Amino acid sequence: MELMTLKEMLFYKHLSGLSCDEISKRSGVPLSTVQKVFSMTTSTPRNKTLLALAKAFEEFSKDKVFLADSAYEKSFYNSVDKTIDDYLALPEGTRVELIDGVFYDMAAPNYLHTQIASQIWKQLDDYIYSNKGKCSAAIAPTDVQLDRDDKTIVQPDLLVTCDKDKINPQGVFGAPDFVVEIISDSNWYNDVFRKRIKYQNAGVREYWIVYPNAKEVQVYFFEKSDKPMMYTFNDSVPVNIWDGKCKVDFKYICDRLSDYMN
Image (cartoon, rainbow, N blue to C red; front, side):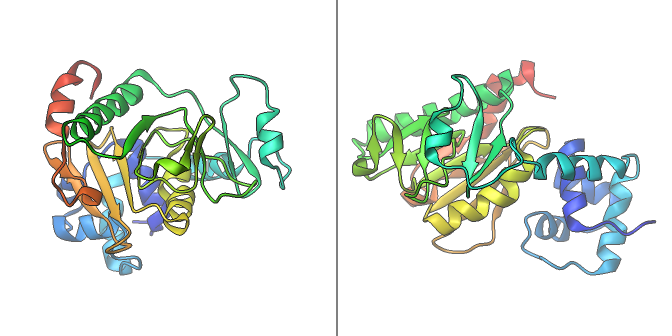
């Protein structure tokens, strides 16, 4: 069995839609170890563990990883040092994000993607309204000038901002308190790696990565740890910025969208 890198296996996991439980059964690696590896709690797994985990992905072509890496690393334009002025000058309807002076292409989300975002937004918005909260929940496309400079504008799938002074007619100026990104084939690398680091460094307090294929949710609460918690679509996931008093019921979402999910 050929040794795979953790980065390659993260891509295979997304591509296959395998849950941690299914990977554990296929590889023989204990579920707790699988969860630690794929939540990156264990950043340098032993080679013996990686070799065992590779058994779960035997049917996939390694060429797909190299193709994916080159595609995801390639910017929408090959030049750098783009600014907000360049972003605003793009033709109407162009879907890109500006990250550290580089444009990254964004494919239009599919129906399931937008429905998951809408269902999460509804539960968050209902909680804010029923508790007369000061926070505001929004869904894409909402421009976020994350670093308060002219080099980065992102469009999270869903965000919650509790400082109303950050909100203006153009979008959000500064870091939201809470961000959700829903993984798709076109955005997984940015969401799992590049934007996760950007969000943490900018001051986002909590970051969720939702994996529709694997039916899993990865929760980072940066105020407490840079290590994530893992949940499934059978769980009600607590919102940490509100001390867990609000929980997003993913089983309800899964049931509502059962006709569109694998």
